[in-house]
Length: 259
Image (cartoon, rainbow, N blue to C red; front, side, top):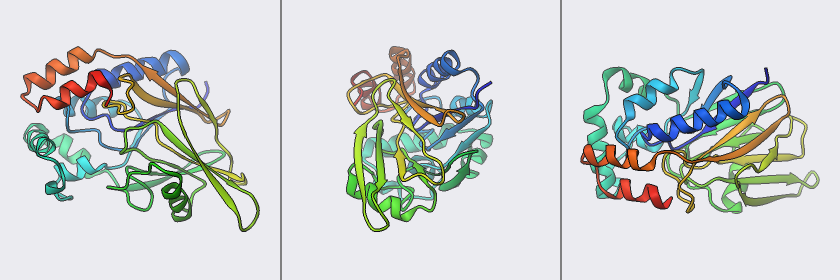
C-alpha cells in the first residue's frame, strides 16, 4: 500500500469536518499511514475531547497552535478578541485531564524526515510558530531562510495557500504564491531539489477563503506529490452543537460562509 499521509490544520473542535476529511482520505488513498497536523485542534467548536480522541486513533504528529497555548495559559489570552476569550474559557472548563495532558505534550515546531524529503512543521511559521500569518511571498522568503529543512508546513491563516522558492543560482532565488484549489497537485522535491515548498493545507474545521468545505492535503510519499482536497460536511450539525454549548454565535455562523 502506498505511504499516504493526511496533512491538516485548524480543526477547531469541529468533529463532523474531521470525520468527513478522514472518510474522504480513505476513499481516495486508503487508511492514512500518518497524520501531520499544524495545530489549533481545539477552541471555537464544541467537541475538543472528541477531536483529540479521533487523532489518537492514528499515528499523529501535531504541533501546538496559538489556541492550544492559550488554553494552557502559555500565551496571553488578552491578545484574543472577546468572543475568542470566551471560547478559551469554555474549552478550559470542558477538556478532560487526559486531553489537557495531550495538549501539553505538543511541541511548537517539529522536523520530520521521509524517504525523499524533510519538513519543518509549525502552526504560524517556522520563525514565529505561534502568531505569524504567512500570507505574502516576502514573509515566505524570510521563512525559507529561517528553516533548515527543504520544505515547510504551516497553518494559522486557514487559507489553502502555498509558496514555492526556486533557486536560480548560488545567489538568486524567486518565491511565488498560489492558492491550492481542489485536486491541485504539488510536486515535492527531494533534498537536492532547486525548488522548496511552504504549504498551508487550509482550515479543516473553520475555512476562511469563502469555501465552507473542509480543506486538507493528501501527501503521497512514494510519488512525492501533495494533493489539495475539499470535502463537504454536516455544517448544520456542527452549528447546533456550538449553539447548545452556548459558545459565541459568530463561530457557528461563519461556518456556512467559509469566512
